[in-house]
Length: 187
Image (cartoon, rainbow, N blue to C red; front, side):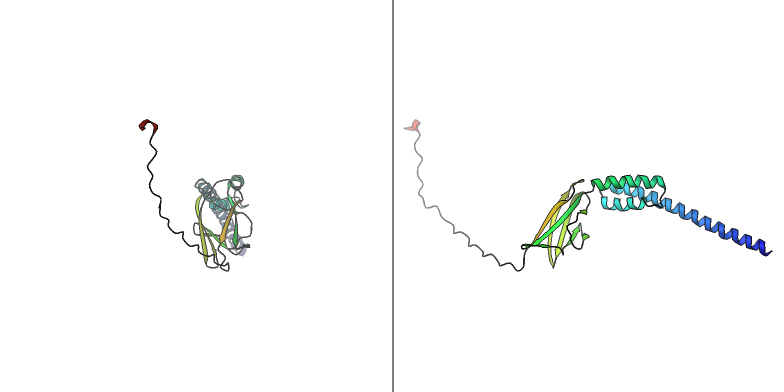
């Protein structure tokens, strides 16, 4: 009786293991396919950064080979067309690295380092923050545009203030009006 009970117990444990493994595989496959579908949708909507995240998810080793292969090709194509910006900041005569960069109110970088940052194509509001100072700029970023330089200049708080030029005095026309020369026809 013990042997048959042990055999039944082994069968139950083994079948539950294989069932959960098959469930996990089905679940993983479904997640991979969903990530692939969402990646294509994001890419078509110009949301390249989200598309890239989903393409990385569907190109994992745990995804079915056909899905992985498609996602890897799409990822390569996306990386080739995804625009990148390189931010440079200056204050006075010096370069500045500690500047926060935001695109459409989402942080892209807490600090700039001279490396390109991938962004979505289209019109975006960029906000640059440094030591309580803020600069904003609207940029239209083109698909395929690589390493576009964006320079941000912050006013140097230690720079001497330029003198304010006096407004020029308004001069009145004191010349007398002169009658025009008569035309030869009226002479």
